[in-house]
Length: 200
Image (cartoon, rainbow, N blue to C red; front, side):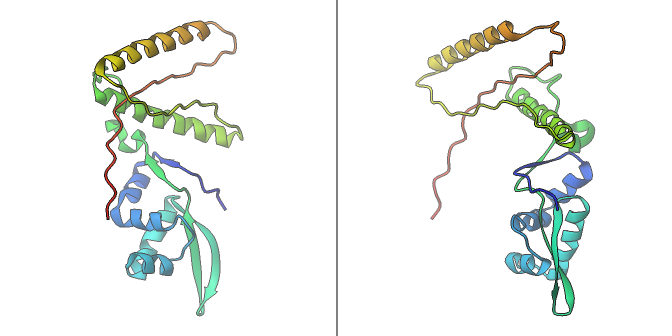
């Protein structure tokens, strides 16, 4: 039985099509905990045969896995679960139309989106390779929220952060180090989305 990952990246076009189907997405979400076609059908209010069809499709594309088979009223009931708690569709799933930073205006918000898309693609591929080799992938992620009092403060912060990152990069970068390994550093900031008020 496969491990259930916190997050799985989908980069095959056919798998992306399967996962993005509205009904199959609901079925997949219902299988965060193991379930059968019968239990999922009851939870979602769908015919069991329809759920069975979607489960077979999801399983064929590696999005659900078999947990156990158990006898039920003279038949064998298959209990399955999603292979991850969440999924992200990576740019390669879109083929030649995948987002790339090259050619995108560096001063635009779309450039940040293209960088994020490349990040998903590269880290997913490196993670798979590391897992196949039985190794962990060294990464760094910093995520924080901050509130600026003014546009001037935001500009000053941007300037100081740029100087700090540039200084650190210059201090530790060694173009000719034997056995050195290239790393990619992306620093990003964007307005935090407004939180919707709680619904009654």
